[in-house]
Length: 418
Image 1 (cartoon, rainbow, N blue to C red):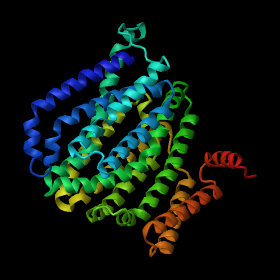
Image 2: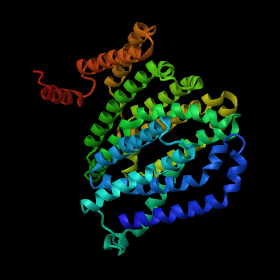
Image 3: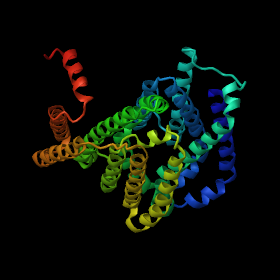
Image 4: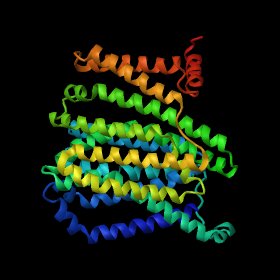
């Protein structure tokens, strides 16, 4: 299966690359005025995309063999570390040419793809075999049908995620500058989403097994625990960044224009909190016999996101796409929650979900009013530390998640607290 997955992915990439070359004039016409840098480095999109293609395929395989921690590390740590190093080298003029910086940045995903490939070869987990097994031949039609549906759903979801930046860059005056401001807000919200990728990677195999065993109580347990744990992470990270967003821009001496991205961050952050707080509904549906319904949800998401984004960008500038995304995400997740409840009596929420929102809000209000006049690096550190202590201790004291206390007890043992 890995061999065929790699082969199909590479063929798909080649088709897209040829299409990208043939349609370059269309891109130039659309972006040359408001985002000329995209046109200048157009061809460097392809090596970056190829690295991401191979990595994503190997990542899926690595999750299937139950090694999700490594792939999460490569995507969340190694790739970001490479990017950070390149930025630092550029700031200190070790990389003197911006063109060189972009080219090295484009090689980030190929590097993590090679890292994962090397690991699979070293551990002898990489098996290349072009002969189809009896199982493959027997279920070929179902496999192809499933792959088409999953690919279509992924394509729709990915398009909905990147469409906003494309519209900002092409429609608004000074599009590239505003896209950069919007991208900073997006980057901050991607930090909120980081725990979700780890939990998804760790849960897929267990969800599949639970469906195979028809173990609905286990599915309900995973659903509710993923919801409360992701809500705890998302709420805490979102409010922590909110407390420090504008102050960090001034303290780190970033361009003042980035301040205008704060409102976009707030709405995008709320979108991620909603998405994470509803748990693993997409993964539960995707591993069930009703996996086709996930494509239907994706089509609804796209049908809402694309027109709303275009309309709101013209009306509300860079705040438009976050508002469109928030509306679409609420509708998108509500449909999936209703579907799982109607079909299997599965739902993600508990009373702790409400308590989490209350605790997070109280901790935010306390820290905001206590330290709103404290500026600079000391303000950032003290405000963040107090919020984390208040929020973390409240989670433990109110036992908001059954997974928190075991972790806390382990930490206490490690540091010698009885």
